[in-house]
Image (tube, rainbow, N blue to C red):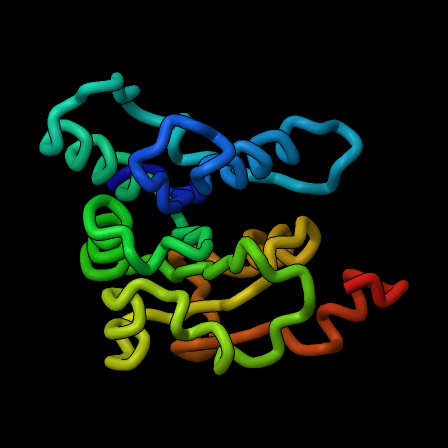
Length: 186
């Protein structure tokens, strides 16, 4: 069994190489937060483990590499933007493998949300169907958060392959937000 300490980040690349038209810009922002010395943010990035992928890799080569990275991960961080639900290749594959094979909890991070998420009711439509099905059937425990550094760091610290959120579709309480954002800036 591999040493599982990494965070596997999944996002819709939309087949784009332009950073401004793809959710990869948020992934790169996460890796930047991790590099900044004055930030209290820690991301052990599963994409930096294992073999590298080259442009033009065959689909099966890509999937094999993704499986290796997921096998060594402790959680799945799903970055959810406006087009994530439409992704029909790698995001559904990553979700399926992470949940069904690896038994990982999922941190669902909404890229266009900056306010507290105290209920998931207004966000379900953004999720890929494969994740909605697994939440509904009770196959996965999830925590839903906005794309904000402190609450994301809290989720990364709180949940892993040994410690899942309490419910199929969880949110942090107002108390948690108040502790992280005492000036009520979220």
